[in-house]
Image (cartoon, rainbow, N blue to C red; front, side, top):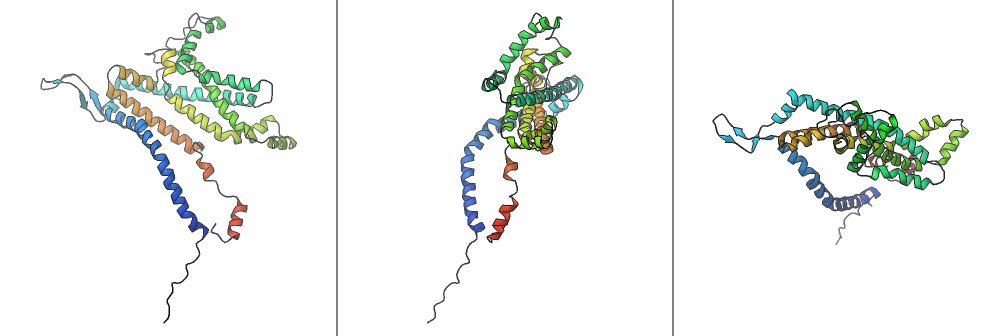
Length: 335
């Protein structure tokens, strides 16, 4: 009697053996990330949805066409958004939008220049280098409100700024001087942040690269343009992105340093806060939602256009070296 046996199974390739392992790792990663994602949804997702929902209502108390008293939230749809871009409210909003963008562009540009300069200086070998690096952190570590109060004393009418300039400038009044005071205070506080991140990028550049450039006759400027700047670009772009996001939602520094109801320094965040203080929650939420989408668009454009590697995704997508690919093919595996 003939015994029928099943044909032998083909040996599994290494690629097929890796698939179950990858699936298990994916399930493990999803399990570990679930608590974090749940917290993010509660802490970040719910306030955003609540703000969008609140922006569709208005708080009114009065008499309708029938003579009945109207109280509580009234659904207005996109009425709050339409009111933002028209009339006196539109003029005030566009002024705040301009101030927000102006402070972001000017402050970030100045901070990048000063931060890179500080990083290049701190990267040099000299005595007390560790102490200087630690002291650079002091302005950035000070809370923004405390820093604003400090600069408010400096820019007082009888403060040290006017004594050094020999002129009586009213920094806290509305005008160009108020803008300049905010720019100076913000640059002093956050330029060290960019400097420290750029310094971290400089630390990983091998010294042999600069030695080879010197042998090729490259001067200091050429070394900075061809070696330093391209190699610190990932760290620099991340630092610039963080500073852009911080400046777009600037509130506490101009509010404490200059004060409220000052059109020259009024930002969108201040405008939303003032609307909320006046119990106009719907328009305040509309301002917040517009600012949120403005920040999202700017961040997305920055990452896409300049290629900022915020989460290290570019490194994971880097192609394998040619030598490793050839070795893999030689073993019979799929490249």
